[in-house]
Each structure stands twice: as C-alpha cells, then as structure tokens.
Image (cartoon, rainbow over all chains, first blue to last red; front, side, top):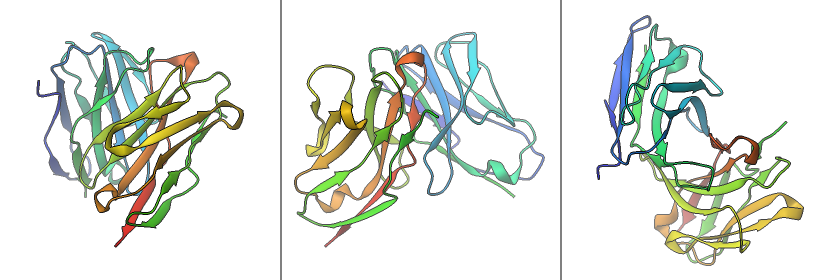
Length: 114
Length: 114
C-alpha cells in the first residue's frame, strides 16, 4: 500500500490564482481530512468527509472547497488564492475514529501565495 | 469551550534525560486520546493512543502516556531521550460526542541538548 499520497509537494501561486491539491488513499478508508499547518502552529481542520459524496466543514473552511466522488480521492480546491493561505497542507484518512482508529497522514503540500 | 491544551511551546532536554510532555483536554466525556510526532518536513506519525482500558499506554519508540481522568490529562513520557527524538509533538482528541473528526493541540517542540 502507498498509504496517503499528496500532489504536488510544493507550489507557488500568485494572488487570485486557483489550484487543486490532490489527495489519494489506497486503504479503503471511509474518513478523509484536510488540514493546514501554519508555522509554529498546530493543525487546523479545513474540511472532512465521512464517505463518498459526503463532506463537511471543519474549523477553517473559508476560501476552500472539496469534493468526494470516490472513496480514494479527496481533492482540495483553492479558487482565489490569498497570502493568508500560505501554509503546509496535510491530507489524512482513517477507517473510522469511533473506535480510536489510527489516522494516517500524507507527506504534505507546501503552498506559498505571493 | 472544548479544547486541547499543550502548555509547553518548546522544551529542551539533555540526551539521556527523562521527558514529560503535557496535554490537557476540556471535553465532558472521556474522549479518545492520541499523541503524534512530526519530524521536520514530514507528516504526522502516530506514537500511541488511548480509548479504553489500562490508563498507561505504551507506544512506539519507547514512549508511553498516562491517562488521568481526574486531571483531564494525557501526558507523554520517555525515560531516556535520544537525539533522534527532536521533533514536534502533538496531542489530539476525538470528542466522544462527535467521533468523526480529531482536534489537535498546538504542539510542543522538543529540542535535545547533546
């Protein structure tokens, strides 16, 4: 298993540009998550999904959109990039959290908006 | 408000010394509790978790944590740290009332003095 993969690893955007961060997992997990991590800070939940076709907002959803058309993929869309979205983005997945199941993380995407 | 608190932003210990990282939560019912480690430039890796049973939990890399209900704490310990333990450590909680997302503390950065 590759686990959770994210592309790209790095990206620089200009203000107002859009992009999609890709996330794929091959563990047949129901739950998938997007987090952002700002320098010296913990992780903030952006969006999450409990299954294909079901998504919900986390703590900091503004400026982002998600979709979950398959179990494997959970892309994160930035429509109008802003400097405040400069961060490291982590995708994660788990089978279920209800029994304390482990959450697996991807390697992250470092995004800079100039 | 419900929260996860890691009161120590940065800790420095000497190699071979013991370590304790603090974590407190403020959820009513006992949540599921986790400790993750993040090495520089890497994603998060699960060290250990607690969701029921024995309150002393053993994890990977020689770490352990003790759940204390009376203190709403889940402190991480290691008897003798190694230089390779230098990393960021995150405490995390899955609230019992909403077991579909995980809430992270702000992290504690651990430095090791040679």
